[in-house]
Image (cartoon, rainbow, N blue to C red; front, side, top):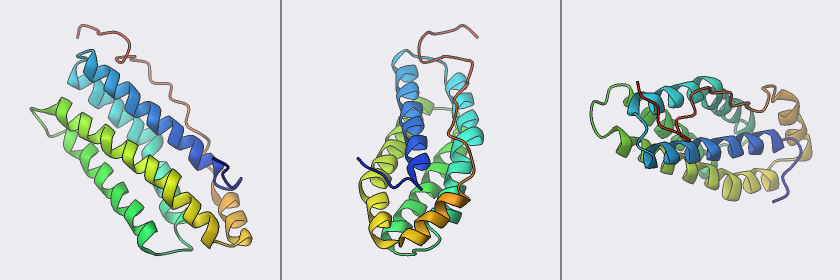
Length: 155
């Protein structure tokens, strides 16, 4: 899918988000410990999602406030709540991690298939150029060291 050059960085971040989902699903399938996976979720929030959501909400979504944009903002809130709730859960963590991965994947698909094309058609070239100048963070480098998704490890 051809993406406007000014928001292509955010699409690359979405690829990293889908890889995040895959890693968690593999960890669940391989019965990795909940603690290891929750640690990864918290790492990913701090090194990716928090900044990505902030850029989308404060820069990309700023020029257009409509239902399509609001749906993405609501999904960001839901993802943040799911992540925050993981630290307080004592049971069913694998089920909550599965719910998180499903929610993140559906959100990424929504933004890529619906929201981004909508913004590209509704925003002017000047608005898109301004957005491109404001997006400053680098594409995520997921350097997480505990590869729980490939092999179990005794804790």
